[in-house]
Image 1 (tube, helix red, strand yellow):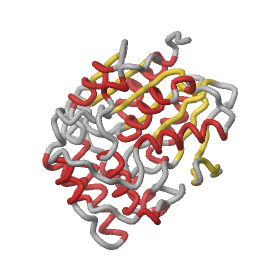
Image 2 (cartoon, one colour):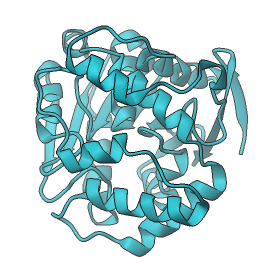
Image 3 (cartoon, helix red, strand yellow):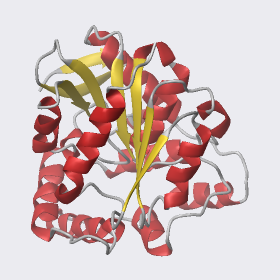
Image 4 (cartoon, helix red, strand yellow):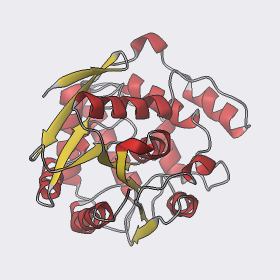
Length: 295
């Protein structure tokens, strides 16, 4: 897969479809490599006349690791954040948004449809208000505004974020499957075999827990976007699971409330995941949103 240099780092990326089709940038979430945008999912988007770009954010996968920043103490940052104290982080979600825009520039794409999941949704939101001239439409999936007054993750989901991983390949793979089951929720069947295959692919491609910690710190240090979201004018779709244990549904509702004209799609039984069963609903909604007129 190709790499390109942006903002003094290298981003690993991949594309699907005809470059003359509608560009669609997919941004993945916390600690997740671009392969979490399943190839079949990407190909189904190509069938909707999109040119699909997926990439590894900084500090994950095969993109540049920000090793010189060190590993933040998440427990300490969490306590500071809960007290409302300012926290120091290696980089912010805004920096990651600039990375994504830099990738578009490197690919000679002036404007694109932007779609992000979880932390990727936060990055997509920032692109939409910080770089509005680069955005044709915005889709934010299972994400939030950073509003501190929203409900926190369920305790079991918070444990997924804060529990240190075990040692060794097999133990880490099993822990990943277990964690994915927790955030998937109980509303839709959990495909354990598929989850294990993805966990193996993740580990063997590039396991890097330090990057997860810095990305989580970036989320915590990026503050409340709600006022800035009010300036977004691109056609916007907010997709959220009704039983999301990691980013409760109020986060999606708050995002839709903040962005003028945003459409909110709540999916029954969906937790913090994109199971195959709901792909067609998600892809149809992205396609419909992208077709809305925008000058």
